[in-house]
Amino acid sequence: MGANGKAEKFSLSRKLFGKKKNTNNGGNDPDVEDPNNVHVKDTKSVSYFTLFGLADKRDKTILAVGVIAALINGALMPLFSLLFGNFADAAAGGIHGFMHRISKVAWEMCVLGAISFVASSVFNTCFTYFSENQVTRLRVKYLQAVVGQDIAWFDVRTPAALPSRMSEDVLKVRDAIGQKASM
Image (cartoon, rainbow, N blue to C red):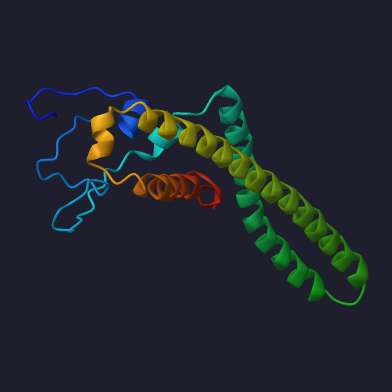
């Protein structure tokens, strides 16, 4: 709901980088110069899926490959437990055929380890690539939004704070949709 009681609709770019009216009536914007030098940080949270709004078809495909690889890697972990149980059974099974049973289970563990290595490498690479593409687009949108502001907008904000704030915000997004999301 807006200030006038009407529902407001925003696109992704408007949510993330929408132009705000130049109101310095006690708002809590950290970039606005405060004569009392008191800053209260007012942050707006967006939904997790809003962070994926800048993705194109190629990025979504990369993300899908990464998710499938992460699912495969996650599904292999319980199989290691089963193979370890088979290893214990093979070790307790007696002397006759001992080496054959142990070799078979060891070979199965090596194959699962190799598949797990490839799957984890693929999902880490895909998520990292996806997050870096998103961050690049986000920086461009952020810069376009700042450059598109009225000159009066810069009169009430500290221009030196914009680059550091952009870096902080973009790094938070990268962390949220990058490798941490794949874990």
